[in-house]
Amino acid sequence: MIELMVLYILVNHDFTMYAIHKRIQEFFLAYTSPSFGAIKPALVRLEKNGFITSSKIMSDGGKLSVFYAITKEGHKELKRLLQTPMSKNPLQFISDASIKLSCISYLEPEDRLEVYTDIKTGALQHKFNAEKILSDEYTPLTVYQKIVLDNSICMYKNFITMIEGLEKE
Image (cartoon, rainbow, N blue to C red; front, side, top):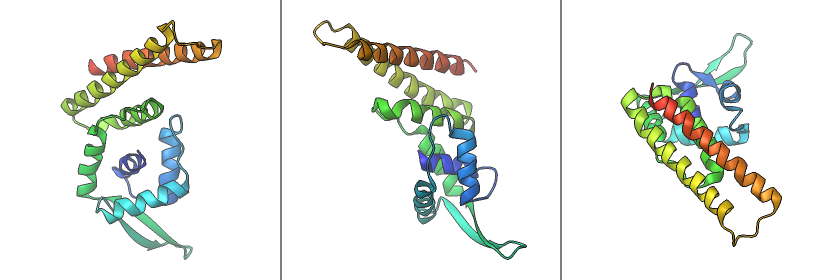
């Protein structure tokens, strides 16, 4: 997801690594908070694959700054990343889906529907799995586990409702 966030940040403006980190914090802090140690390797991978370019510019104060810009191939990669099927891992699901939905405006309306369907399908599956565990009389659950499962079910229900609203746009 870090590559998706970086490419999305670079769609409208070239930025330094520091500014990319700051923008990611501004846009995505509710879902994730990657460190500089995660952003730097992502920038290296993206540049190596031709999805971004870097240019060194000397500031008026004499400091060398590296600015990153998205390439034509980077735009294609951003679209591909947005349309990549969701992870089946429930731990990653909400965070990844939230990031994708935050960037969905990049896609054309007809391409958004594919992503909505994929996310909604995943949310329905995760909700079903949580309900199945909660309702299984042979699974000994503590009160805490029941509360967490019930909260997960509510979270997925809310996510499904949100997707259904977005599908109508």
